[in-house]
Image (cartoon, rainbow, N blue to C red; front, side, top):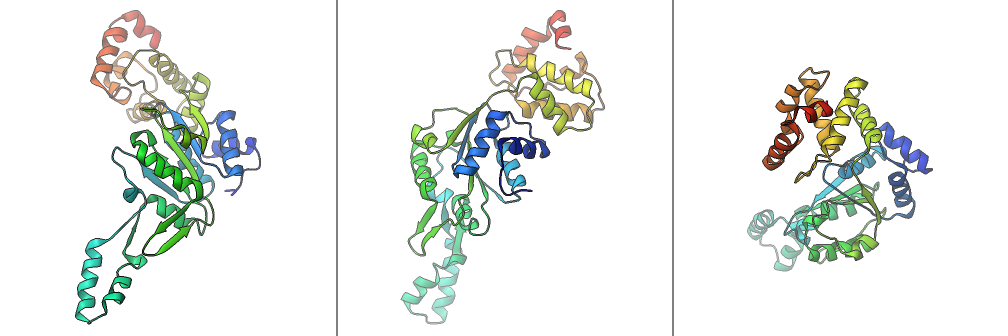
Length: 298
């Protein structure tokens, strides 16, 4: 694959070659991000394809994907590096048997081989060869303190390890930051990035996605599944199903050797679409209990 984007149209073509259907707005953000060497901040509901952007970018540029999965309580050591303490202690005992000087011993136990590289340090060190894709996934799950730390790292892509020195990226990683918007992310971090909101796809886009990702599905069946999903998202659920649920459902239906939706198969496979018991109850009560509604979905 190419290691550069020549135009926005080329971005769309290369994404399409990887079975990712993107609108022109997203393709433009990806093009500018690559040209300006700025991180991408993708926000949207779960399951709309934010994480997939990073996976596809790694395939397009034939480079490594390094993923930092954010969570509550994530700190700098978990994102940067840690020293392998048990291995260091074992090495100290071996050195003591050889009557090594304390100063030499201290130097020996802080060699790079005792360093446990976490995603951010890994991305900086890997960039000496070819720029990797760094996925910082679900940043909204972390806290504001980690955001401030991340902002500092993204500003210059250099990391100082007191015992070793400063390590600086030669080629800036391709950075994709995602958020499900469970909380507001600080403006300072967003200003550092090019922002794009990924919404639930309309019928035409979702239909194209299903055909692209599941090549062996019949067009009429893909259309029926897509119409069902488009209507289902209008129901007031705790968690509306995204495109990932659409694809999972379509694959499940094919695995069951179904070629058309009917009332029976919908009832049997609700767990592919809705992930909360409250939502399943809402669907059964407000939608599937009415024969007219059932018919309109099919």
